[in-house]
Length: 100
Image (cartoon, rainbow, N blue to C red; front, side):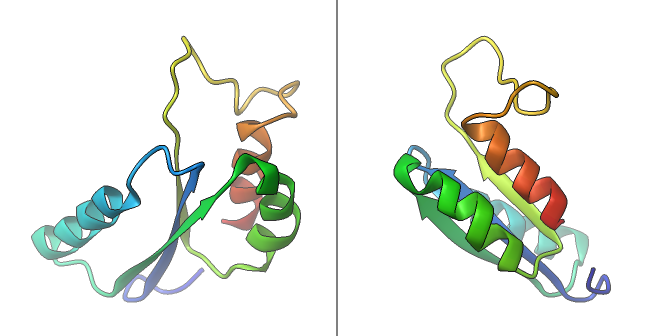
């Protein structure tokens, strides 16, 4: 992990269901408001058909200090961190957890 003066993060979203510019703006505002130094973010949108590639090939190769996975869910709950959840968003969550 990089030192506190240089933090690199990635913002992820599947199928362009949310504008990651809003999240990026939030980080810029937090950086300014709290005197944080050099937070850089990169936005990565991907389609559901590329989810396996993102989890298995892309995420493990990224150098990052933090990640934000933005979902637009219309469900009562997301089971992304349960042991038996091995599909969909759970795979992305686990890949990001391991990478950070």
